[in-house]
Image (cartoon, rainbow, N blue to C red; front, side, top):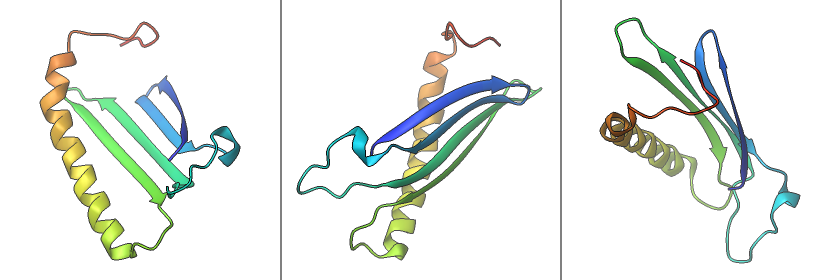
Length: 103
């Protein structure tokens, strides 16, 4: 999977958008299946109670021969693992800031 991403901050919070990159951006490698249809976003919204609402939406078509039911199961497990890992990792980064992002 080769992707491009962009981020922005608006009145609602912080958003990252991820899309597939053109096939010309990186040569195809023999022996690999490239995911060419990708659309994802992360939306983070600071809530009044001091917590953050995180919304993740993703779509990817891996192509190849794997059945849809298996891909759906794997993507659900992957999303759950990502959020569990975020819960563990985010407290370690609370004191840091990004120079281009204002609170």
